[in-house]
Image (cartoon, rainbow, N blue to C red):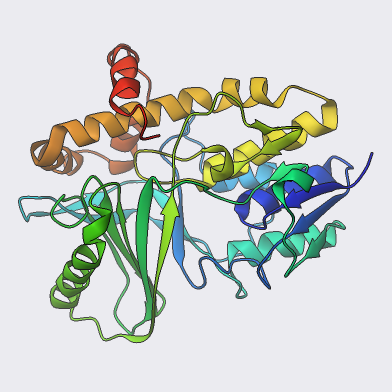
Length: 350
């Protein structure tokens, strides 16, 4: 079989290359930037552990695929959520709600670890090389539409570790803010699906809030903006090419935990290529129910407004947070009934 050409070296592109070579298929990754991880240098992101129906942590899924966990990995069992009424809620769980990982092009990042594991298996990487999607076998170039904005603030600090989430429309319309501080590094991200014209004002308000709340002393700070999009495609094919990750619209519409979708879609793409299976049939069986569920959760989240946010955060404090989030990510008759309404409400926006 010919070498499979992959456009893009984000998590979706690198993981697809990894899955292909483990199936005996040569893969080449083409990236317009000079290295992997250029979009998220030194950023914290998270592997969430509450959407798996069997309660299996995502890192265990990675290990089952043969991926070595030789990257930065920190379990999080406690966090604080600030609700619109200004109250702070300490949420706890017996098992990790998520695992923090580092993104970027530095040692210890998930991007670099996965690239090294690919290189060990013979994947070739071609940096500073733009592969047009029309020449690719797999398209992993990230989002191509602006459905949401994420403004990120990365810095170094001597402050103690922090896991803090803000769910408040006055900070991030129809979105959220999180601050992760661990081991002297910090990432604050404001994600919003509304009022893009005011993102500078919301971002300043959020920075001022955290500076006052924690008194953090900051060095080596970097600010950057990313865009994201969620949509449920009719097909994840572009001609004969397979689209993976956000290039196909695969994203968690509720809280933006997209790495699971990126990696799972890449696994399915490799399976389709290796065994001559129908990629659209594979992802619709595995991912479509999860995409639709995240759309329903987003519809409920936005419809409930501040009252709903206050109720959610107060209720979360009374439960094991990972288990409570797991309940929200289970299908139900109510959510199935809401799905057509949610799709209609989001028509033209996703």
